[in-house]
Length: 114
Length: 116
Image 1: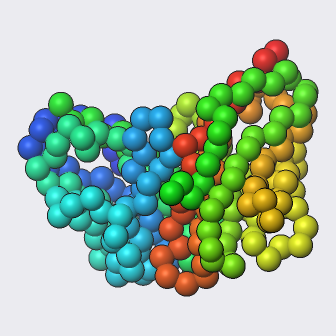
Image 2: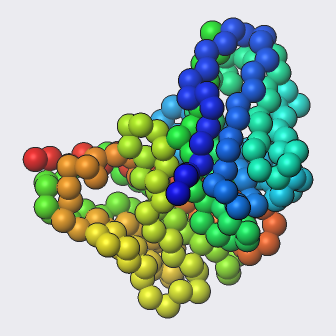
């Protein structure tokens, strides 16, 4: 079956611009996570959705970052006024009905802010 | 304090040999899960193996096994009969508790190179 998909695979933008990153989870998975992976590091948690609601957004670094999941499936991570420090790989993961289920990751979106 | 520690930035292993990748963790929660993921150069995180804190036996999945030593708070990954395709970054991760956020906390990874 289809895994987690993320678009675009690569995004290059200029400092100060707005970007949207999309995640399409495994069909039927109710839990969705966003992580950010900087070069040479492990992924770091950003936000967790259970259904349509953000159950935990404690990992978002500041109010320039926002994510939505309006219909409980596809999620969009939105970054306003991008900064060079936002450059990283943004990973999305989904898990089945319970949060304790294993998370399956997508291929990531590599964001480069010039 | 680091919750997940992977002390080996890089490891080499000869093809067909076994290799152990180290992971120690720190938590006061009695209920937690431990995971290993493989990240090839393509970037995708591939789930390998899971160990629950209450599991009595070490987890195994094909050539992967998890050497779980609860008292020492270690969860080392053992890969048997290494293959060239095993060359990748390997991440250990922990999920604390059974309620709340279920977020994973990752270590900094170990880069494994399998030699022909």
